[in-house]
Picture (cartoon, rainbow, N blue to C red):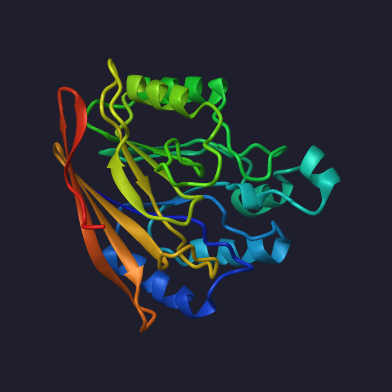
Length: 270
């Protein structure tokens, strides 16, 4: 069995300081085997914001895989955005924008879905998909295979933001590569469901976290996820910051893997 904590959209610079220690305590108390953070660690890619994000990650007990979000490249420094979009992110989190982490039962593959030349809309390059395919081809069959990116690959009908460029192609390619789960953020809303069925495509689970710390709430509370893989079963538990500023469990989605990939067994009530 493997347990993976999933956080997103911390937005240091527009964060809620009163939630910082409760979030760290809640995640560490769950004792996950690893932690995935799916982008937007900062609000405006300032060095002090990256320093705060780096300090946050250093206080987490489990190994962390981090990928950038669209807020992690400069907005108001056009030359830096054009020529050195990743310089400050790399100062804080290293040169690799698409890291890979693995243990005896789980493999995490980071995908950089940020387009530095677009403010919000992401993209998934063919090169990135080819790289994922190579990584998963050498991943043991018994591993839980988790893709971590900032931008979701499917939106609900009422979503106003534009869908990631190449999203449908990416879902098909990830399914064909043997991915089990795609983790994302960006929308500041929670979701755990299988991607829409398509003929010839196996089921892949999509999991979105809202925002762990930001005060830029969009009708939902601050939250994070805990994924638990046990044989053919996956549970996704949502932890939400309550009025007392403590994170507590609020619902669980359950999935099972079969010959056609992952199917949804149950979801929390809307």
